[in-house]
Image (cartoon, rainbow, N blue to C red):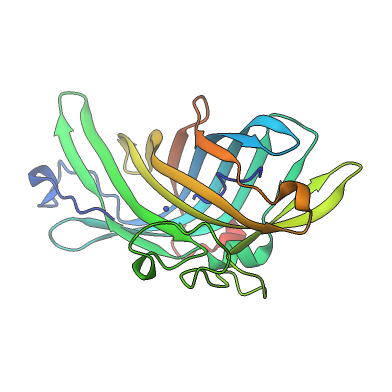
Length: 242
């Protein structure tokens, strides 16, 4: 299935001795940012074959100084997935976007000869199932009690729409596990740039409206679409402003 990488989507602890005191030499990142994340996934999809899905997500991020280190909170606003094989289109329903959790995690800033490095562990994320109810293992069977209606659309797991000419539009039900990290440089107090690193990714299809697509694709992180930018925007901005 073509969107396997859509979720971005998304805390591992971290703080650096270089960032435990806010002073004139330390970049002041407190405020609101537009976070643009790019990722790519190679998926071997039933019927269609192998495709690379390039996903661009826009998130609303707020950075706060705690007195000891920075903490960032983000909310996913939009997710756009483009497969390399144009015969299929993947659409994330609004219920899917709304179900993506708000994340909060510490930031790590470290000073070196080139300036300040930036590191944010976005935490492991499970979609469509409760990992604590299945020993941390992602379930494969739709009847597994760890699976639940994640996006509250009346179907098990998480639902994604796929539109293929001739075949038409149909819904796929899936569960997913992902773990991403942002690593880069503080260009200024208004801009951070770097690379989105996918440390883990797995996905299982647990059902589909079209039986031809009911089996699970093989998915793995791909290269060539991994940059991120955090650009300062006005405090009080909303997803609509992005």
